[in-house]
Amino acid sequence: MKLNSYETIYILKPDISEDKNLNLVNECKVLIQQQGGKNIFIQHRGRRHLNYNITNYYDGVYVQMNYEGNGSIVKKLENSMKFNSNILRYLTIKQKTNEKFNT
Image 1 (cartoon, one colour):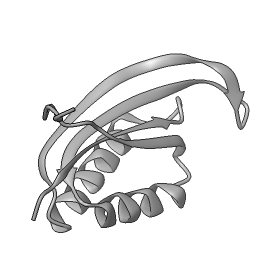
Image 2 (tube, one colour):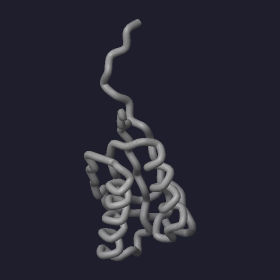
Image 3 (cartoon, helix red, strand yellow):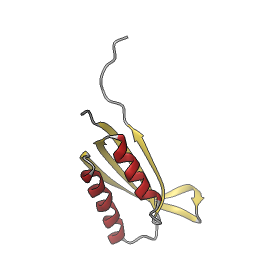
């Protein structure tokens, strides 16, 4: 089975503690692993100013996750993020492969 490469970026509330931040990252990582995801790479992008306020927050903590998996992993991950009150926004994109196409 071929796995696709995905990148998920989510924004946490700025007043979240470091412990809650790490727990949330670990929960996402475990969820991806349980669903058969591989090559999980997580980067903390830090606190940044938002261009517009989201639910009265002007700053947010950015976290980027790169992983390989299938569409069901993305759906389950985004469902868990949807109901987490500490996450302001999230976005998942499918990354293109480096394969050359014949034209």
